[in-house]
Each structure stands twice: as C-alpha cells, then as structure tokens.
Length: 313
Image (cartoon, rainbow, N blue to C red; front, side, top):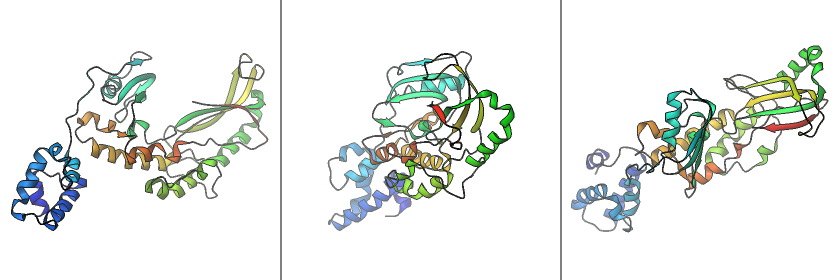
C-alpha cells in the first residue's frame, strides 16, 4: 500500500501519522495478518481512533490520528485590561487566548498591540502547559534599568565617553555578534536539554550581550530618586536603560517548538493556531520549559562606573 492509498483512506499526508501508518503496515504483515483486509483495517482506525487505544498493534497509529474537536472553555478565563482605546484586534486576541482550555487568567497592558496569537502586552497564565508563541521569539526579552554611583550632571561633559562605552559593550543590527565571546553563567547551563538548544549554543554565545535590531536599544540618562526606598539617597543619578531579547537563538527555539505544538493542536481554529500549546507532561513541553536561553544579559559598562541598583522588568 502506497502513500497515495493511505491519503485516500484519510491518513494525513506527511508527519507522524503517515510515518506510523507505514510502520503499522509492516507490522501488520509481519505478524501474519491477511494483507487483503489491510485497507479496511486502516479505514476503521481512521474513522474511530479512540476505539483502538488499547490495541497494541494499532494504538500508535490511532493515537497519532486522534484529534478531538477544539472545545473552548464554557466561560472565558478571567482577565483584566489596563488602559482604554486599545486596538480592537489586540483585545480580541486576549479574549481568544482566555478561551483556551488551558487558560487560567489573563491581563492586557496599556501598550497592547496585535501579536502572533497572544497580543504584545498580553499576559496569560496556563495550567500545566506552555505556549511557545506566547512566550515569543524574544525569549527573556526584558527592560533593565541600572542606576550608578555617578551624578547625572556628568552626562553633558561625557556624552562621547558614554557613547563609546555602549558601542564597545554591545552590537546593533540583524545578525550582530561579537568576534570575542563574552562570559556569562548562562553559558554554563545545560544546553543539551534538547537537540535544538545543543545545536544553537554556539550561535547564542556569539550573540551574547548584543542588542539586535527593531525596538531593542541601550541608552544612558538621568534617573531621579525621590526618597530612600531604593536604599540610596535622593538625587539625580546616571542610569542605563536597556531593552534586550534573546536574538536568533530564541527565534529558532520558538519556531521549532511552535511547529510541534501546532502539529499536536491541528484542530485549533485558524485565528488560534499561534496559541497552540505543549503540556508539561510531554517531552517537548519539558524541553521548552528547561530552555537555558530563558536568561538575558544586559551590557555591563566599565568597572569605573559601579552600579548601585539594577531592576529588571
């Protein structure tokens, strides 16, 4: 029986189900079954996969074929919106996300705008599941503010020096990387948790500490402290604000695991396909959760400028 015959019987073209269908055929014949009834046997497995879950011979194919109809929550998971006049499509995306059966709660920030599945500026809590595209291609994307033990009034006279510090300690642009690799504890983590991260470790190391392109930035400025709640005296201090992401490694990790999630949740409506999830009971979900590039790295100016306090958001 050829692939075109299996497609005619209802086996999806390509992917795990087709591979297991061919394996089933080989096992079916090898165990002495009548090849004349093979087509009819596969037809019944396709028609009702769950009926064969306890059949040792047929269960692998049956489980690969099983795709229950998408059943949204009876009621949306509770979510709250901050801000008004937000993009209508972004609000709709948040509501769609809260309809997922794994959704627990959500929040929409004032800067929300349309994303892939989950809106940018959207937050979604899930139960025993991870949504690769909701985590996003910028794994560990964050804003970080570092306040230094220098008064802000040094900025006008040291603009060139401060600009040189930024230019020497980071790189901007698509594909930007350092010729001399930077050191950070994240590179000592276990990058062998999956073939994906093992393959990308070298790429991540080359781009460690770079800023990339798009809306990523690094800039010095003045930070005003109004009381001693932060642990140092009120006043205006030199500060460094950075917006960093995970660069090419994060994008590739997201792509690989999103494709796997979408293959498992192929029954999701088109508008929800980027919200496909992996459960933490699955090997892929566990691998994604342990991804070592979840950390970020903010550039560190020369030691002559000592940070008083850093705050990551």
